[in-house]
Image 1 (tube, rainbow, N blue to C red):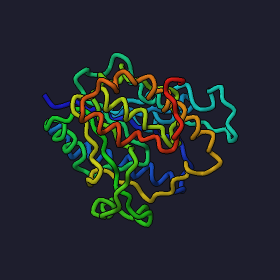
Image 2: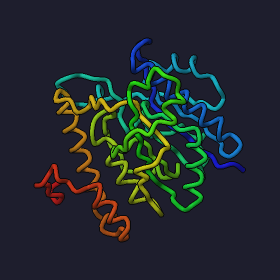
Image 3: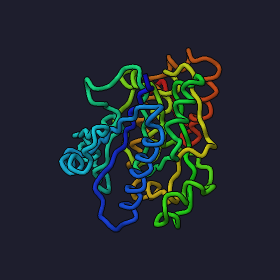
Length: 280
């Protein structure tokens, strides 16, 4: 039997003719190519997590039997927080909820941002990594020139690009999701995936970060989320990250040496030198 993978993305309606629209189209095109490339070796189902108001649009747009369109109800606009710039952004706690009753327990789930494109061999390589003993891992992207956005996808496939340290592609056993401690972290804002990363490390048998491989890529590196106008969103995510870390202290203390090294790398808390977890 072929290994089973569920790949979760979060599409949303964007205006045709814009850069964002082209990025989304390129992302979907790359996913379909990678699925076709791997169809004899791995069974891939796409799970599209979309806003409930956009559910019908995406159900009509994607009708293949290997695509499941699933809505979420809560967004950043649902939170009891008065953000300076109101936005309707997805919550990580909603995105990671897989459709109940349809998920094979021994499968793996992949989460990628909507602007992350795949190399054609991506799924085959993911299966090879799993078979080599890594049950849970992150794959860091390459950043290719944005000038390639309106050129054939093949040109981005062969571009060297630049190494990127951010985490936007997670691979984990699907059964882990039920035990993860995930709160209302806001997507599209910094520090959203750091608590997810901590959960991956703590619950894995063998975790790894692949930080310099040619498996995924992103067009340009605009980093709009770093804008000062979203500073309160960033603070929201930072505070929730601290809460998750504090909740996990007992597991962190029991973690083996290798996990402790990963935690030390990703959670130095240099940006919060006065954090006292005993009061969180």
